[in-house]
Image (cartoon, rainbow, N blue to C red; front, side, top):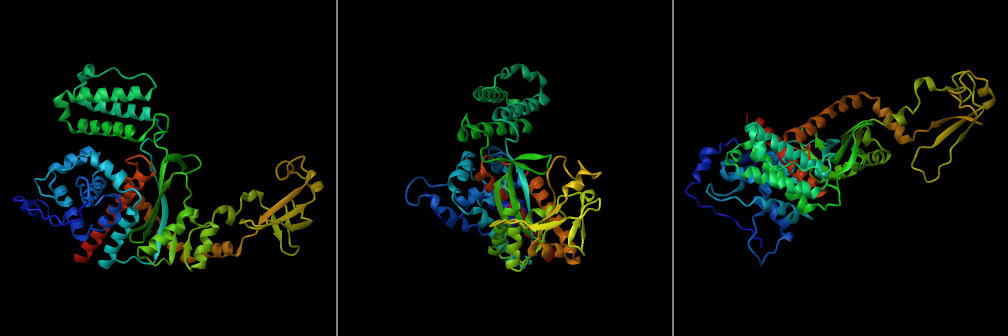
Length: 489
């Protein structure tokens, strides 16, 4: 049962917050700036209102998830720290002596209470509304990019992942007392996942019998991570399925790949994220530009210019930007602007004859346009050469494949759209504005290295979406607070 009511906490220890949580503390500033009551309207459909036990306050639970972004910990360690960290309790809106919910409720809150909600868009919009209220300019330019997040089970099977975590746990114990290994159960040598689960449970139980080990923070943290991994597996996974079925293989280059998800981002020039789409790792970056434009507009940005890399210069994106008078600072793919050929393979155009000439000086004898009905590709112009001359040419076998009955040179005819973009690329304004693209690379690095977006905290696309939404909310709020502090300085 959900009750949306004001909680008046009367505590003889309430003044501790004034003494121990300074005015410039990040959690105090977030509490001051953000009215979290919007959470009730969004997720009340996932609660019953007139029967059942009273549910944990959804604002309280959401704030715990935000604390997890600021302090990357397991659910168990997060709740343990909240028991004694006075700033956590202040942020959660409870009295200093109040207990903290059981960590198992966090997992249930993510799965049951946040499902089928629009919490991602709401969190981003809330931060941008606060920015506007505090007269922080959003501008009319967005910078777009996609950054990858590794799956929690990166390139490892479930059994390999459990073995790795068990190894880390054992090593943490050995650093304290190497002789402890004699009390541990024998390592699992089979390739059966259930045997590995049983071994990990037995290892944890063996360590828990040693009270001195339990007091070591490094050991305790790794026990909690191993236990959370076991619980997560038993709750979400089937032995016959993969460890993270929503995670997919994506490619960062021709030689490097990753297993996980993609976060497609749009941000202002001053570093506020205005749009976010979370997908599996194999999705193409450029496909989500239209979604990012619409999200940014909904969140208060009048989009007049977009800065991105080559992935965003597809024909569909060019058409949308042209139709809506948006300047797209994204270079065309080199296969369109320069073609596939290397310089030494180039043929030369004779403007007087209107024909192409091969590297050995032989001119085409006719040309024709390719007929591509209902094709979205650019039209092509085909030049035909006398194959008998090719047979006697020193480049036979290089320029002309031996044994073929014809020799042609094909030229892609750039559409007006592509030609206009190519002309725009060569302008000083394009070169100057494009230099700002590095800012989103900085933002991606911040999200991944400072707030833990480098690796997913849970399994599945839904869990990744919740993590990304919480991460962007915290990153935006910190940026807003810095901007407000600058004004007050």
